[in-house]
View 1 (spheres, helix red, strand yellow):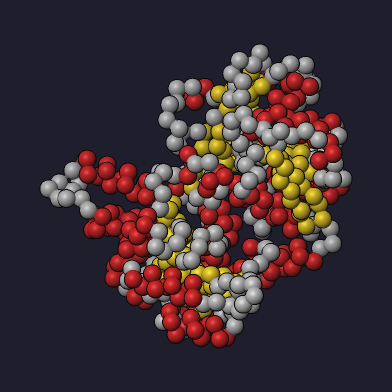
View 2 (cartoon, helix red, strand yellow):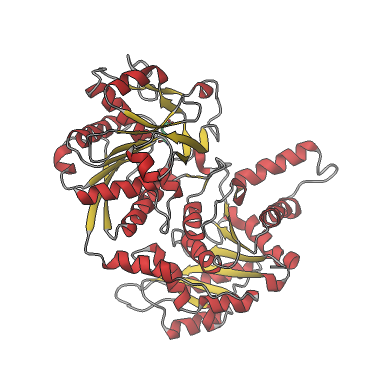
Length: 529
Ligand code: GLN
């Protein structure tokens, strides 16, 4: 395409309306023909979300290049078939960090460095830079949070100015709002949308399209109201319907003619083919089969903490034509274990940090190992599976990770050598994609259908090489090792229906059309139970 097209997506009324999914869905509709690149702008002052507690901000998503980014990148990658890059996530922390470096270097010598033009110009140059570097046909820029939040003003100003830089035919503004139906009134209400659009217009942007989240399809009447008050065409008011399955959103948008409106506004020519996508969703919906999976962790207060794990389970289920019912089990103060776990067909112990809830997780793992319950341990989950095996099979009493007990007599999990001197916390873990060589004829190599596998990592600890022999002698299989043969990347047990662990995070690369092999294997084993 001669000109990159820009779609700016802002939010109004409240956060958590699914703006990331809306962006990913719009992108998905365009991605069959065009190269779509998403950019996410967050207002906070952390350089990246890697230093935030997932209960505060949701899962930290890790990219191939090692970038720790907003969880919306999970949606983008799952819907758009792109491998995102760290550069595509802007935070105000990153922006100001870069401005300060430029200022110290003398790039602005003689000038007072100001929000406008300097910071706004810098943000715009980041947008244009990504578009150019990626040779993008379409760039979708999502502004996190809502219009009116003070930390978003610079992004919004940059997006307003962008119209002049790229030309009115090459940019459109989409506003995601909310239409409540208050109980008692039982009528769709447009006022919150009108108010947030007013706020957007105060900042110089009139939306070209409104996506209004609502529990029902919007009535013609309310669409008319919004068109009048918000200065859009009625056809450009699209319902962001509440759905039980986020993968339906592209279908919901398409059915309402969103594609034609995008084509018209941006002078595009696209007719997406959603046949395979639709078939998988319909198949998933109508299947009579169900498996029950428990995710046992400590960030269970906010399900978004495990967003990619949840999605990967659904992908695997859809490809086995079986629904996956997911329960979250808090392992802190975990007591009536066998009772609680009895009803599940498979268990996941996901990634995590620190010592809270650890003994509960180890008990869960022991229960799975001894009762032949399909188990997948991810990162911390794999490390704790090693600790459990060391304690209960190898007889190494109080074996542990030094992350939990630095004085353990048997440090079966220990800090990676290159991590010992690391002082700064931000962006310093072993991050991003690393390959592993897989042992032939193992469950894991059979699932990957390959002798190598690459998964994304985010950790500081490893299986201590001093204990490799002891563990292997007792039957722990290291089915995948780093190419230099030092680091355990995958483990499994034979004589068990499915006892598998992975140092990386296979959930991060899973998608509906291409489920992660280890999740596929877990659901398969769970169905056979
Ligand atoms: N806390 C462990 C480590 O740093 C595991 C990390 C994780 O589960 N992502 O190695």
